[in-house]
Length: 391
Ligand code: NAD
Ligand code: MG
Image (tube, rainbow, N blue to C red):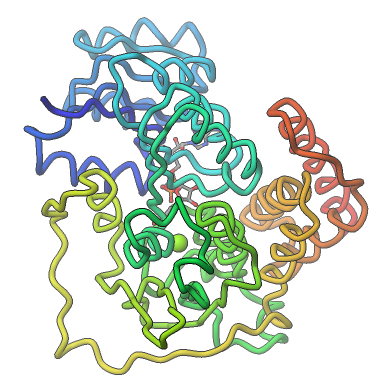
């Protein structure tokens, strides 16, 4: 029997890579539902190709619905945010790929966990905002959580199979080594960073990704979000995690053990590898990715991160340590700042400054319920917009 898959964020970069892997294995995986925010044409084309039972277009008005529905007779087209929850929880669904970008992914991803689905997590922002609630929900409803983020997928592959039943200390683990490419501005001076444009920031040297994560990679906020993500996924704290700049992105992360062994996962910088890994886990399937070319690879370099030029990493670490809603505040302020940067309203270095200003001003609070987290997300966005307006 093929696994039934709901793909949240089908029109994005991870959505595209997921569909490529699934298309190679029609006997193993069946697309049950696809979602998009407002790219109607792209969603319709995907429905015509993959013939899912349901498709969700979040931001469409009811007047568009009939004309779109007529183009996809085999698929039922739903509209609005609540429909994302329905396709995440439908009883037919085995696996949910959470590939919506940003805070918008939290509610449907959490809904998938509540329904006990196998959750393939690309949407790191959901875990940053609601780590404790999310991990607790997965446990309570026996939802299997598999990381798609290439670093976390690599770490998962370097841990023993039953790692969740033990502490990292019991497993003899000294450090998790979270690798980072360093982004397009790794070698820029603090002065040069003041001048960089959205176009330059969007051009990542190794990975082809959506716009938001590309900017996060340039500020190193992506690594900050990933540090928090790793703390929740592997039940640890920032002291156990060392960020290692590795510009070639051949090693996707490592685990260092007490006896001096370091296990690493290597591969092409191609998200189809972690996607195929998580889809098939614990089996292995062809991802359509070329083998590493050892003779072309050249030297692998490693360096320490520079938190003076790239303060976002330290901001994320501090937000995790503060706990409560501070990680959600960090994420919300960052989303607002990235969007303002992309629209030319603020400079590159003001992204980190906006996040810092919001975290300094906003009162922290516990993050025990979804309602509180969502309200705090909105509150932090209001603070961020005020800060942005004053720059
Ligand atoms: P993207 O911008 O290419 O795609 C985002 C998807 O989310 C699209 O399908 C879009 O329609 C949908 N979406 C956007 N706003 C929405 C909203 N308000 N409501 C519902 N749906 C909405 O992004 P991406 O690069 O594919 O990244 C998706 C997630 O995966 C992010 O959380 C990112 O951090 C993570 N991730 C991406 C990569 C990568 O290589 N692209 C790697 C690791 C992790
Ligand atoms: Mg990553």
